[in-house]
Image (tube, rainbow, N blue to C red):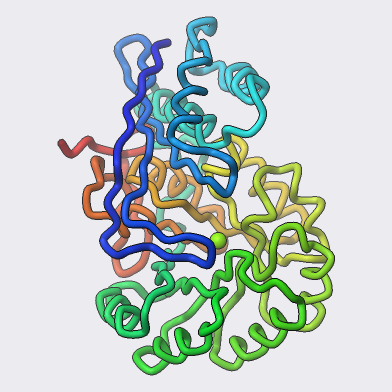
Length: 338
Ligand code: MG
């Protein structure tokens, strides 16, 4: 098994701002795993929030030695080796997991959703993310996002209310809100959420810092809409710690270490009666199409990372009137554009 990789700068259509950062370019690393004449693609979208940079990803990919394994079908053994190789490095691990799955699908000539027994008509609608911006730009983004029926709005700054009011002036579409740990006191978070409930917000993602789990449990008793964990949940081991504080989890391949762990998380969360959302970082169609393969199993999708960029090197899952449309091509169902 040969592993090679290239770093690539994804260009954002609009400057992307959340409560802790702002950017125009997001680097990703595209991985190619070749064995027996078949190439599987993977992608790492490193996040500094989880201690990764393009350099840490490339160092990790350079250091692992997959040639000790006979074939990509040995997923359990290969991914155990990769996971134990070093702690963290979750997006680098995800890139390998995604490439292995793409290879397997191509080898069997089946799309992953079919291999997993899923119905591609059951994909959810995906939300479209509106980052923090001036009110004029937010208004423009909302008008540009006319084809998308659900908005995910980034808040967690002092003028949250103005952002929501600006959107509500234009549309009555469903709004989901993500504070990205932006509210530091539980009383502030409670007041914000009670106000957001009056604006018809469907749920709130990660209102408080991940370190304030007890405050989030208090908060959950004070509000009426679901609270979804994002920064508080990386892999399956975090799910039991969320009990009582969150109503659901946001799974991202770049946090979970890939598709195999994401599948375990979906089953575990459902067993605990928690809602499941599939989310993403700013990613190309490689990682977005990978996550979309699992989407018939989840309650909510926020798989728009590839829609927010102008130079996606691949095409794959499409969004039609907000609904994720999986194709029937093998593996991830992706095509190289250039
Ligand atoms: Mg989030």
